[in-house]
Image (cartoon, rainbow, N blue to C red; front, side, top):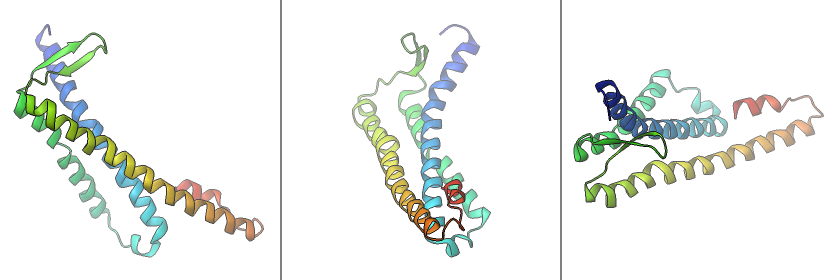
Length: 151
């Protein structure tokens, strides 16, 4: 890696990609779960405050910092530029990190939240289809497209 700015950018990019993806996926999971809760329990969901939502988001941001912190502590910031992907990547030399923690992070960051999102979207779509049926029974007096915006 040539130049100090290039090295700084490479280290920043390598750590941020291990921070940004988990944050994004878990915030999407929280959004999907909250929409389902709003549809299923509308009266209880109205009592939620903005501070609870902010606390939830802050908790997600703090918990997702475990991945880059663990990578930084175990591999001490070694990065390289990968010409195949044309981006910076981390050198994972520690065998515990490579063989145990990275597969664990893959399951915790990739598989579990994506599966949960899919499992939460299905009941939301069932609610939408039920709302459409009710709107059709009312002979068009109820617009079901508004419910689609909520979901």
